[in-house]
Length: 120
Image 1 (spheres, helix red, strand yellow):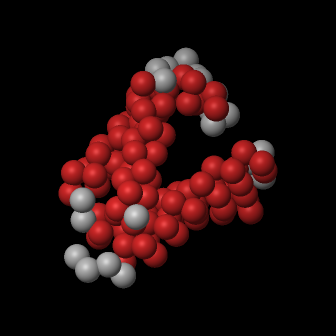
Image 2 (cartoon, rainbow, N blue to C red):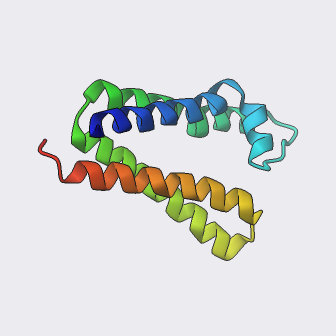
């Protein structure tokens, strides 16, 4: 069962990344990011919100190793930490920030706790 949930978490990662990779304008709007007179923001969305997550999720599935899944959890833990620090310091839209942060936290906890204890 752990393997199935791991793969689902990795596929979610790929799915989340596909939004930034293939639909950077939609993703930027969803994240309340405003465009400027340059398309560099779209490039950043495709890279850091898109391709990074797509390739990481696919690599984790390809490696199929508990430590790889655990490290994906560490990535989500970093995202959740950043999100909750933002809630404390930046006053973002609370429901949206807590929803995204909650998803990141759940994925982090699962991937770390379920995989650090498994034999590698």
